[in-house]
Image 1 (tube, rainbow, N blue to C red):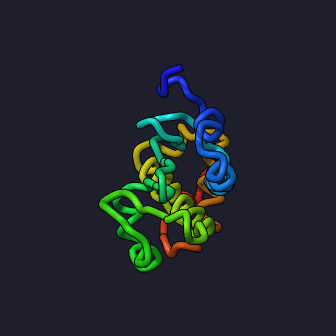
Image 2 (image 1 turned 90 degrees about the vertical axis):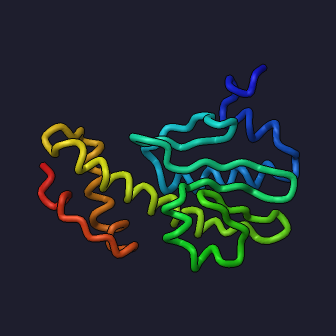
Length: 157
């Protein structure tokens, strides 16, 4: 089997046994923040996509790699100060507790940025019911949670 034909389930099953529970929890954490996203393997790691790739994660020998894009790393720099980061990635060492709530917050923030960007690209009249629902959810909870102001979503019908 080639890695390109892997599913996320197979990716997790192929991980070392002592890492599988962590990977399953990371997966569930991301799906909690992104219930509308599709899962796929991209760049040989689990990827969550909604209009575009939102986040990726992967295991290494000593850490969990989390890839939310450079903008998210910059936005959450204070919260990520204790971890090794690069332009678009963060390493969470396996010998420390994995910060699942931080992963969920970063993922939700990435979704809010993508929804905001796509609201400007796609006129309101072309939005599906599901998009209007998630834009409304974002506006009422995620947007206020992260201090993001957006008036594009106020009059969706």
